[in-house]
Image (cartoon, rainbow, N blue to C red):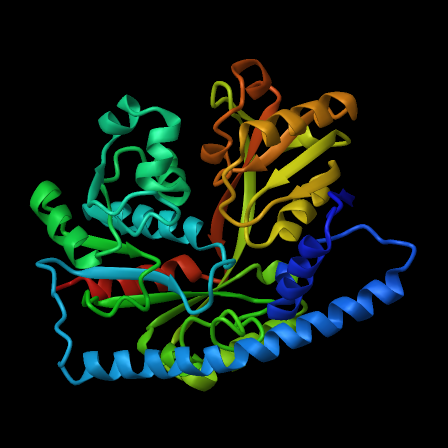
Amino acid sequence: MTSRPFPSLASRLKAALLARLDPGLAIPVEAEKNAGILSRSLNFLTTAILGLLEPLSVAYGNGVAIRNWLYETGRLKTYRPPCPTVCVGNITAGGTGKTPAVILVCQLLREMGRRPALLSRGYGRRERAVRVLTAAELEALGPRQALARFGDEVLTIASHMPDLPIVVSQNRAAAARAACDRFAPDVLVMDDGFGHLRLQRDLDILMFDARSPFANGRLLPRGLLREPVWAIQRAKVAIVSRTDQCTPDQLAATDEAIRLHNPDITLIHSVHRPTGLRRVSDQQLLLLSHLSAKKVLAVCGIARPNSFFATLSELGAVVTGVPFADHHIFTKREVERLVARRQSGGFDFMVTTEKDVPRLLNLSRDEAQKVFALVVQLELIDNGAERLGKSLEHAIKR
């Protein structure tokens, strides 16, 4: 597997910083003749930058503590929706595979006979208005307008559950009111809202990456923690993802670290299981065997590109990885370069993630026939689905 070289020192410095924040975020770069000198220089620069960020991290932590205290003491008002609310979130800044977990929770609620509606902030959207996404509205919007209005994560969820009512706003209380007024759901699911304390919830589900549950253990911006690890005590369920990508000892250490801060939490192990390839041009689903021995150009703008590239390799593909920044919106020029690289490099086709598809805005209809999205679902193991179902039932019985 090869990777896209970084042409500038700035890009290499960014890769080095990501690796220091969390090794799982490391982006591969090509070796150079003066690798020793470059490595020492990057190490010096990253250490200096992280040192400068330390005071900001302390200030951020103090701000979080004060805000939480204000909510706990009632000095900041909260909103209780008329129906039960379930939150699926992270304690770190992304990279845990939360979107498939949100889809799974909504599907489980449907199987229980419930009528869920989803609340999302619509990460990456370009407007602040409260927006309601329905199948009819999504069909009427063009790809560019839909991305700007709802964000890639929401569009990914809608592609799996097109009839799921979705309301998008950074103000989750406003989104909850809109959802209840418009759809009369009997349960709300809040996506990525663990730290959004204004909206009361009945169940908090936290996602953790088995290989690196707390990243480097530091708060933003010195690390990737959104809150101190003791905030885990607010959650009732922890879903540990990518358990198949770590050793049994690593998994045991992750479980122990989570239980250290919340001994009563329900721990559920999971894996991200590829289920097929979806052709972008016509949404046709192909078997994973279509990847076997194929030379593919793997393109993604996600938090952990190496996991995506490794998965394709494990499925038998000969992979050349091209990583971009998380939630990257591909320009027309970038798409043209990727298409030219696929054609000139003798690649059978291009493979991307489902979250990247809405951001490939400038892909022609003809070229879309050579682009596939890897379809992945979250699979709960060791009776995890049953235990999550019981937690959901207990939380929403009011």
